[in-house]
Length: 155
Image 1 (cartoon, rainbow, N blue to C red):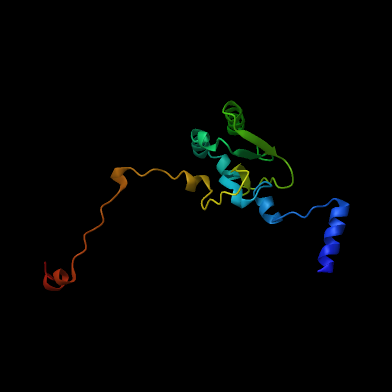
Image 2 (cartoon, helix red, strand yellow):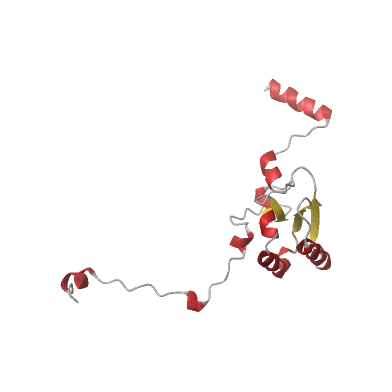
């Protein structure tokens, strides 16, 4: 108890404040998982289909902040995204600190809230799943009853 208190006093005196969930903050560009509405990886940002999907649904992000990994290779999508965010009054921030990574599975773009929203699915391919056309839906096979199988063996 006194060790915790003395440790806290030393941190306050030196100006260092402890950070909550540092691993989670590194993964989500300084934000927390509970605040994430949508996530795209660096590899997904390079996919033109997903870029179009993101821009098509950008009106869903009003009132949120878009965090952009500043260490990603620059492409047309990033320029379009920043322009569209400015045009539609959506806040965006380029993140260039140690939380931004350039690996394919690292976070490329996040849409975050100021408070916790606790979304179960945050990946763009899960949030905006492709729609299923009526022709693609197959009717389930009708199962034969036990008695039908028993008495109609030869047929």
